[in-house]
Length: 89
Image (cartoon, rainbow, N blue to C red; front, top):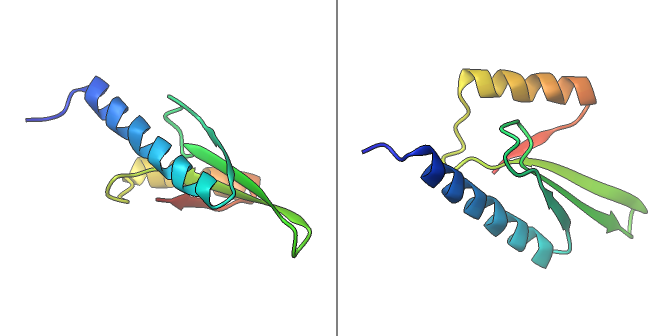
């Protein structure tokens, strides 16, 4: 039986919160883009004092790690447009 939209949303949101909690334990400050339906679900930042730079991670949360062709295209277009890498976790 296919999951309904509300259940998929709740499961996805819970997964994003788990990812954020893990990152925060590692010293990252995280922002969740709730309900964005875009290629970036979480933005994580932390100061790297050794290198003297602000590290920024752009994360797309996917249960299986699989991106549909449409999702892959949107991700690649945004990466190219902004000059960033979006991690799929």
